Amino acid sequence: MKLAILTLALGTLLGITLGIPLGRRVERVAWYADATLARARVTGWLLRDLSGWLLAAALIVAVVVFVVWALLRPHR
Image (tube, rainbow, N blue to C red; front, side):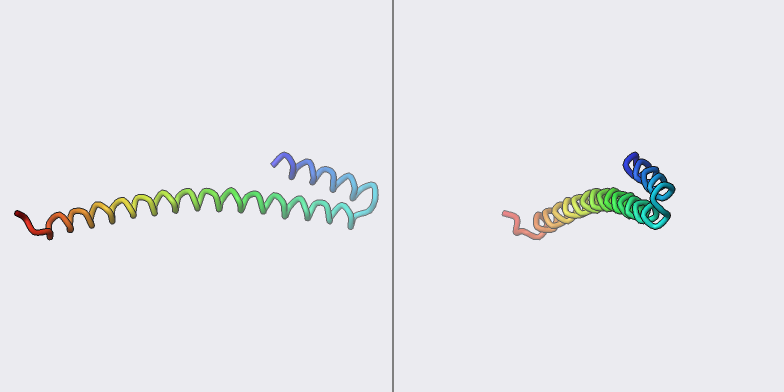
């Protein structure tokens, strides 16, 4: 976030001193970088949540399979 704000400030300064198009390009690159970092954070959260759900589902399936196996095996 700090990098994005710093780059936006740099883009504004370059836009004022050297001309609008260069400043807009720098601001656009900063915006894309910030959006990419935000997507990476969201993807990380999603992967963490999904892996937790998958682990819980695998544990439930293992318990169910064990119980069914224990009930269906021949008793001596």
